[in-house]
Length: 432
Image (tube, rainbow, N blue to C red; front, side):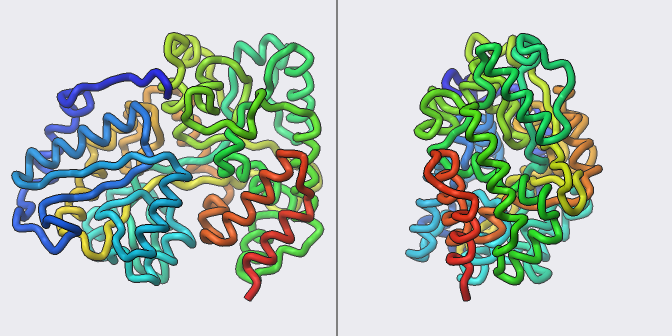
């Protein structure tokens, strides 16, 4: 999102949300609680460090401030990895922001165990029934909910139809062998097959995670995590399949040093038509189109999507997905307005306006009607019909194991690691 779409404080989104703000915020108290610093200041950290969502989140905060005289947001947008690092530091210091982004899973469980986040179970009960089924699963631990969901969806391959046509690829690959063949055809047509943000590591882990799901099966992956035993041939085989892809040299020049949302990063590479594919989540449409600059119309006209292909002979269901979404937690010491804000951003009109940005799939029932792009509508349907769902592995496993796994996976992308290395890293990081 190097050439962001700028929105004023009274943007279209802000106007669409105004009606919802009055209803969602009516009756909210102004007396505050014992938050960090001033009781009226709400520190909010999120990962939308580029437009359109950076401006959209700001619009929402302004709407909330207007309905809560005296409340003032202090917003800090951060890139994913910088966010993870900085949040870990402030949590260890016992001073997390009042509201902060979460993917749920093991990381959120650790924060809850440390007493750093509010138990929102009772409050979320007031709007749980407005959400799609399973929207809060990633944020619910031992029956208690510690965050509210904002969007949901799944990771899949986004592709450029024009570049596929150039390589004479007429059908989408449905098996790993067909996918590797498509990569070879793109290279033969002098097209960069895949964009990858190797520097940030998390985009690369999607490949190994999906291959592990396809080769070993979702149940086997979950059992391995529970038993802390990844020493199976299937997980080594997943790394071997990834090594097959890396051997084809399918990525853009400098991919190991590329960020996700930087000027020459993965989103910009896709948005500007410089690569044919990427494996990314439901937010990619907004990220890529926001990075496309003058190429935006061309990107939107040519974008397509297909699910991660099957692996012949793999165990378990081949229609499982890896996905999840974005949510927000309130710190234990945050003022009560924090919870009211979480309620506000999942009000129906606000969620429909969020859907209209193309930045993700809303979690409120019926808000998917705001999805203007047919690709996002396809993903929404695929998400609902998937045979099973796995949250991002680096979130599920927690910070220590997730970091070790990602480092070992990136080593394969760099040609310096081995399939066994990922298994060894997970074994060491999860050892009792």
